[in-house]
Image (cartoon, rainbow, N blue to C red; front, side, top):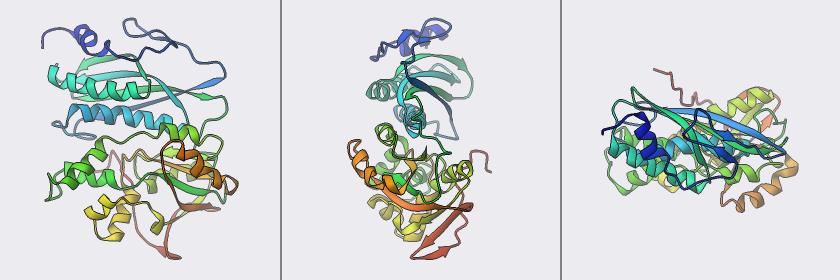
Length: 324
């Protein structure tokens, strides 16, 4: 494709439907000029997706774009923030007009749905990678953090667990039934997860702590435990498993292990005091999201697994980007 960096920016990234009133100056200058609403804190998160690590080179660019933005919006959801702006740094080995067209379709479709405006970024040459920085608003003092959990709080997760790992198995060619309806469904759940933005907002004032599940619930829950100085008991029979996951893995124990370790789920894991348990279902019903209680926090450390009142010694670990 002919043209330089500025042609790329003008052709693909300046044409967007979202034009927020709190954006005074966006793409085209050295910096964006933005207004934070009075009485709000600014929530900021940055994530990168790299070819070969987070997606394959032949992946549908629409799905790659959705996954990239959804993973960042999920961080805002975990804090209870309302998304507002995003900046994009895109590194490509060669300008690829077909790939860029698909990427922008997926990116702007999700951005428009959540009223997020692209306000800046960068393009450069190199191995394919995508880095996004998202910004959102939270009413002063109402952010959901990892450090607010207390002894006795109950542990919840939104949606189902394990589908993303099952989809990844198909993407990596680890299953013989690739191309089946089951494979197509689970692959889409891996790439096209919906960030729980409305659920995060609904949980403000109800949840004591929260985060999103990006490396597996058994691993991510450990961050809450570390910041709050507590231990956790998970009842594995309470893990929410989809019908598709049970079809993918008929062995219940193996399906439960997938649910505990599946990364890039982008569901929320949150803790709730006993006094607020009755408010959870009502609050999330308005967000169109279900939640399941999977355990409870206690004075101690680490995650303990239990089934039918008996401890289970499963040595499980979540996803590690730097593991061999």
